[in-house]
Image (cartoon, rainbow over all chains, first blue to last red; front, side, top):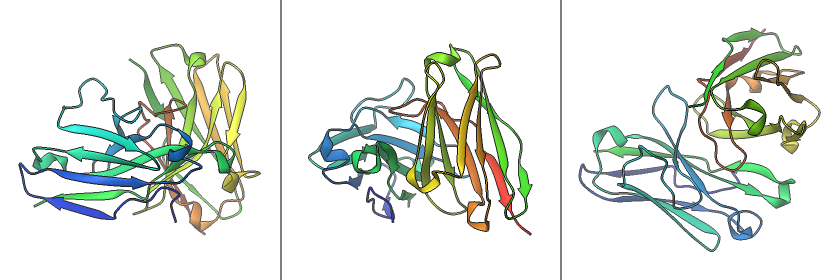
Length: 112
Length: 116
């Protein structure tokens, strides 16, 4: 049971827009901790996709965007491409766990 | 450009310990945190703990408290994660990553298999 809740799977056709939610609580996202997102392609290490709720590292296409409101955050992907098929994880911190890092359970994106 | 290179795969017996290394190149090792994350087969990511090499401060997830030890050798720019009293549920890929807030970059991962 992950501290941050994500849908297990989402899907979309090439060119479409999908969103992945990340729901937390008052001790993590709602406590003003930033949310970060990672993309994990099969058999590889996770890669930072969004940091500080809304910021993209250099090299990440602007098709990827992040937002945060209250105790939740979202990752949006527009113009879906086949190579976007991967697992996506949100991450934050939790002050009820002595400041430990916490991850969402991950969301498998399938591009139909 | 910081790069993290981890040690190779390990096979361990239940009850034993494993020590995984994470060597950094590029950047100033002492100036950034190293975080350890693991991923069991087919499962999600799990935060284990982090070290601030310049201060020698370490934080561990409650779940691993007492079983995990994270250290850093500034002279070789290498961080270590040692997990003791291994059980089958510890079979996972163990990753190191740079950073305290967000994690970037990540090491390539080290598969630790616990089997009798």
